Image (cartoon, rainbow over all chains, first blue to last red; front, top):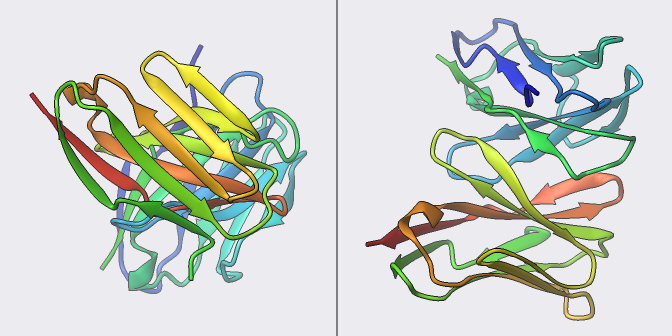
Length: 113
Length: 107
């Protein structure tokens, strides 16, 4: 049984570009949450998707958007990249709306130059 | 001020020592989580608790809702326990994380 998978593992972009990160949840899970973790900091909640809709959102600008597909996989899109967007982006899955007992993916390390 | 504060920020120990990591929060929560993050980024959920105490192997987590405080204890620490331990609280449909405690256990 595969756990949560994320792609790509690492990514380098330049300021102003757009990026798409992908996440496949653990088998049987229907809820996906995304987090941003800057170096030396704890993760920051970006948003949570359930039933293909954004259900909760943290304090992130509209440049951060997402999508959940019918198979429960999810994408995180970031537009107009800033240097400060450089971070580890973590995806976590769980079963049920608003459930926080999550399994985390390995993360995608994004570097913005 | 962060809603979730952890102490200490860094901790070193000798193998076999008893470890305590503390977490204080300032908001009303529905549950608290302890997570472990190894170098490279992978996060593992250790405990979710809303009252009392939970134990799993050498790990013990306690929470005092009235005092808005939780502790994670590691008995008989081992070098493989070296990781960052993160406290997170469930608050108004969001999960708020502390900045983590970096633990290094030396043989």
